[in-house]
Image 1 (cartoon, helix red, strand yellow):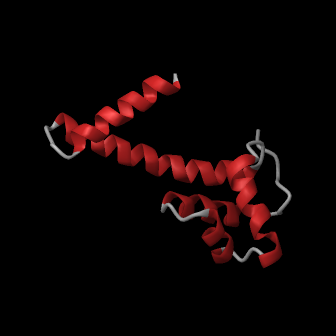
Image 2 (tube, rainbow, N blue to C red; image 1 turned 90 degrees about the vertical axis):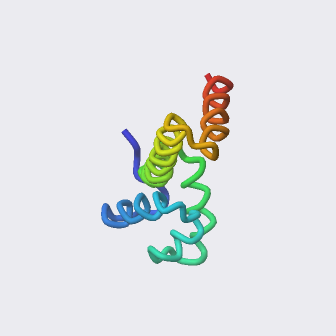
Image 3 (spheres, one colour; image 1 turned 90 degrees about the horizontal axis):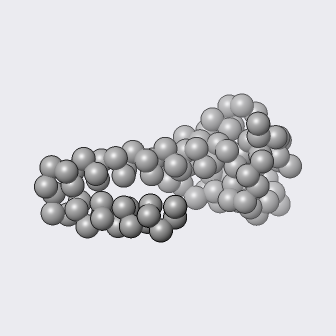
Length: 101
C-alpha cells in the first residue's frame, strides 16, 4: 500500500493530481494548479516521477497510464479496422511490449 509522501496532500488534491495527469499535464503544471508552494515544486515533480511508494506517485502514474491505455486501445481498434495511420503505431506498441517483457 502506498505511503504518504513528504508533501502532505488531501484526498481531494490526490484526485486532482490523477485527473490532471490523465489530461497529460506535466507535474510542474499540476503543482501550480493545486497550490503547491514554489519552494516545494521540484520535490513534488521528483516524487511524481520516482517515489513509487507514495500516494502522490500512484495518483500521478495512475492518471497518466489510464490515458495511455485508452489511447492505445483506440489505436489498436483503428488498426484492426484497417486504418493506415493506426497500423504503424500498433506495430510500434507491439514491438515495445515484446522488448519490455
